[in-house]
Image (cartoon, rainbow, N blue to C red; front, side, top):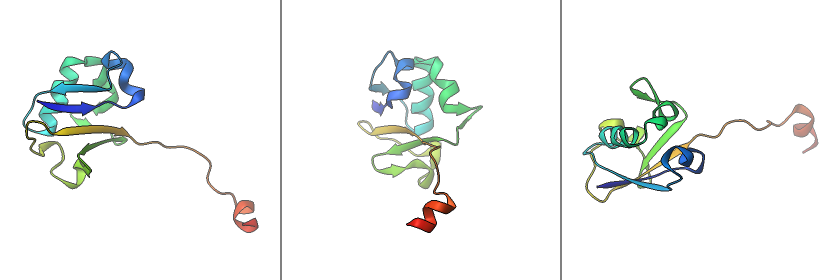
Length: 100
């Protein structure tokens, strides 16, 4: 089994579980098992068959986009983390830059 840590904003879709055990020999298979167990998560994680641009998945400390993506192999006991990108905020204005 592989564990997936669920970020706080997505926990309502996993019965408020912070971590879910899944099966799968690749990251894609593990995520498929996750959304099979919790179908409401699919719309938050996937756009069709691809991960949404703002969804980052880490195997240990490695972003899977820099590994083999969803084809990255998993070993029993591996731990995945889903980390949604955070956007927004206010950029520095011209007056902020001029005064600082």
